[in-house]
Amino acid sequence: MGESILKNANETGPEVQAVLAVRKEGVSGREASRNLGPSGVQRLKNWLANSAVMPPLLAFAGLFILWELLVRVLGIEAITLPAPSSVLKELATSFVFYLPHAWVTLYEAVIGFLLGTLVAFIGGVLMAHSRLLERTLLPIAVLANVTPVVAIAPLFIIWFGFGALPKILISAIITFFPMLVNSIMGFRSVDENNHEYMRSLHASKWEIFMKLRLPNSLPYLFSAARTCVSLSVIGAVVGEWSGSTQGLGNIVMMASNYMQMQRMFAAILMLAIMGIALVNIVRFIERRVLSWHVSEQKQG
Amino acid sequence: MSYIKVEKVYKRFIRRGQQTEALRDINLELEQGTFVSLIGPSGCGKSTLLRIIGGLTDSSEGIVSVGGQTPQQAQSDKQFGFVPQAAALFPWRTVLQNMNLPFEVNKKAGAALTSEREDPVELLKSVGLGDFVHAYAKELSGGMQQRVGIARAFGSGAPILLMDEPFSALDEITREMLSYQLLDIWETHKKTVIFVTHSLREAVLLSDKVVVMSSRPGRISQVIDIDLPRPRRAEMEDTEEFHHYISLVRGQLRERWG
Image (cartoon, rainbow over all chains, first blue to last red; front, side, top):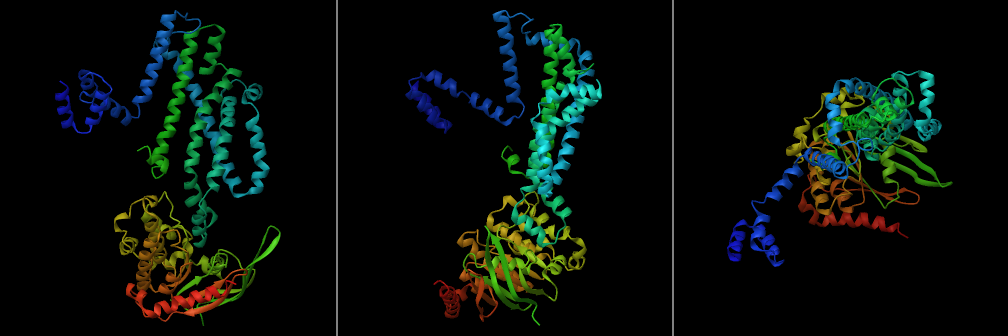
């Protein structure tokens, strides 16, 4: 029996070492051959490694199954922690109820994100070109950043009412700083050789910005955008908590008041999905735009 | 009248409250279409002199004239093809897009130059990079990148090429190969080249004129004309005359050690 395996192993080439190793450890020949099989585990591994979607999807599925089992085995009541199956059921049956709320939150987050990052981008351009402007304006930006946005939110509700505007502004404030800092860094950190080359051609400041500083800053900008886009959802929800009539944050707050756990978890789940979707949209654009960049090629 | 004229140029700057003299009383006259090397120890101001001629830095004192213009005027007329130490290729551009960069900026000045523009692909082929026209700059080795930088300078239509130790980051074998490629491409174009280097061999092999500089303060110790026949080939490096010039330059550099 052992000999026949050795013979097989010789034919399969690289797996010889594995067979011998397994045999040395005293595993029976039968087990060894099953482990190798038609290299089923290896094939699964390869398939997973080559798929971008499968590993995280499997991880989520595993997490949900674990959660479901925990709730069932330990007999946790829905009032404490609802089973994921009941949350999904709630979401499926009342999807029409959730959708307009999700739309409101998405709108607030995305508009806030666009506003905050756009203003930060313009500020970054100005501050990257003038140390004086940076020294003057950056402290204000730092002040806005260190002030907890949760503390400003009620103020904004008083000023701007219960509509979308205060949520958009809170989202904008929370996304502003990371984008500002990264864009200043991106515009500044141009290679000195490249900058001097542009100067030797008597390129204008505008040309140097468009041809050198902006492309150079793109990896920084996208890295900030990924952070900012998830922050923007947080901003929208914080705004909705402080005073709102609609949105997923509003649902979470109301459901919490009435101990409607399924509803609360359904809204949280939608927020999480929204965050993942937004981050992946940014990743998708980034991959298209930065195909030249080192950080992209390594993953290819 | 000489093409490039440097008269009584001084360069001083303040470092940690102390005034340093980077260049003292530099006088130099260069003819059109010649290959001139600036050689000297680190800190002798050879790169600074190159940058003053190219209008990238101002001199503290003195006059520089480039074809009758100030360096800044010449720069705004795109008279300079600059090749820095690192190739200055933009990583988000392909080799061909990098070759086209000089024509995309400061277009007003480039109008005249664009008409005599050379085919960038042919130029790349002539330096052995025909297969890499559409490769991204960072996919190329250091030597290949520098070849693109040199081809770009020759293809930019600029009559004066300023090269700041373009081979210094490369290994010995690549350097040697590139110096012959540079000779080849220069023979066909006959542009004015100012070439900053640390290498005696490169200076003598490439140049019509070697400007030997010494440091602290940076000044010219001697200008040596290299009367070796052109076109220069690899065999020339074994001749007595070649070694004569090498030792001449070396002696001049050593004299300033003490």
